[in-house]
Image 1 (cartoon, helix red, strand yellow):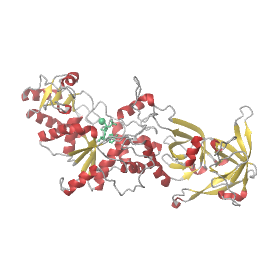
Image 2 (cartoon, rainbow, N blue to C red):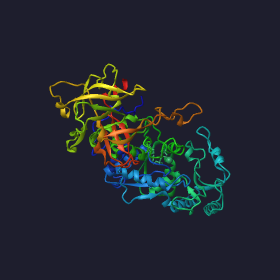
Image 3 (tube, rainbow, N blue to C red):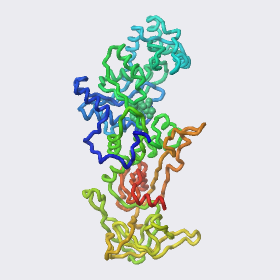
Image 4 (tube, protein in one colour):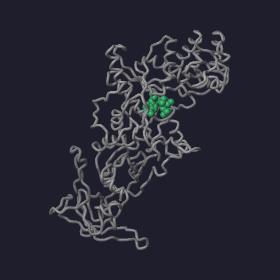
Length: 574
Ligand code: ATP
Ligand code: MG
């Protein structure tokens, strides 16, 4: 098994906000503080490209960057790496700001954009041309690819590599002025076409793109490559620890080369492993495909691993932070179990949200010996884990709903819930005994149970010490509120959704049953005034939250996560 896989049951003891788990990045910072390497400063940044919505993988980076800055009294900037006008949109910028804030990231007044620095980057490009370290190249993108060689074959020097500084300055100026069509020329660094590191083989610094930029409009028709922008932006912002994911390790020599040639402030780059989760894809490009092709309802579909998706699903920022705090930060990529994330979600909701009764697939129960037209209110505890959450009153009357699953006409062994002749406890209610069933004459389907109740068992307490083997939830039919409930399952069937048969793509692994909509759920009346975003435990069923599409006349709930308890396990086996 993968060394970094985390078993759900093996999650560490309850995390607290104040105890940061140590990791190698934190150790480097501690060391730098000890040796006064950065004059006591800790300054990090979170640098998303606004080409999609943030996902749970980004939460790891946010946690590391904002978390370490906060821990050491430092600063963390939010910077949009917006160097590609073709893929970037204001919608993404806005969603990213909302998501980082929701996760608790605090960038103060330091919201920056790589595009803020386009003038400076242009000047630095000119500086590199002047020092003979950059040249204008007339090869097409395809020719550049060919000429750069492979891991086993060195690159070849191109015909434009030895152009004079004057000619390069003139051509670059004219590139900027819009004289040339897209793709006809590039500005390239003059490093080493034979370098074993492909990134050092005269990488492209600027390309011609006659495209409108979401912030600079039509001011530019040449744009810096990410590699030319990223390190210099960190330098401009005087970032002390430039923390990024492992795939940038091979780019570090190039970033260092730029910094040295330009003679500017040198941030220290530190790479860590990306978060991968089982049954989940964390690639903005693939998530965009799911959205664009309509496999999901949008970026915030509750099945999506996006921050907006899991927020809508009912995950709290506290749960995500607890997950991040306990996650490994290392130099090798691994895969974390999706159930580890769910563990932290449950752990958080268990204590923080009220419990209520809801019946998802109702079966009508008539209590024969309960007076018609009568009702009474019973006390129910809002959260046994937290007394301060108090109690509420739930109405009881002659006609109730229970879960269809809580009755079996022919119960298998080990089934302890309701069946004809058996007594069970209604949670916070009474003992009831089933005395008969009413069936649809045509279909034979059970449409109603006839029961009796023991008035002496009020509150669910045994009047004479006699025991019942199970406790089930219920709602009073007359008082119940209707609701739509959306049940979610894993979006993908395979642990690694990228693993496909030949000729298929990852969409072949989508779970066709990832969404089930129940339209006839019945809720206890205390939920009458609930509003989108509210979270609950539906007793015995799981955690649910009110969806943003919910309205007072049409309540809609999302299942956040199932309860994991023995009852659920036995139920699955039956
Ligand atoms: P994607 O492949 O999903 O597009 P990206 O790395 O291109 O991801 P960016 O917008 O460039 O996305 O990411 C911003 C920051 O978040 C970067 O520092 C990146 O390294 C980090 N990041 C992205 N995905 C993950 C992940 N799965 N785990 C940890 N950090 C991540
Ligand atoms: Mg990217």
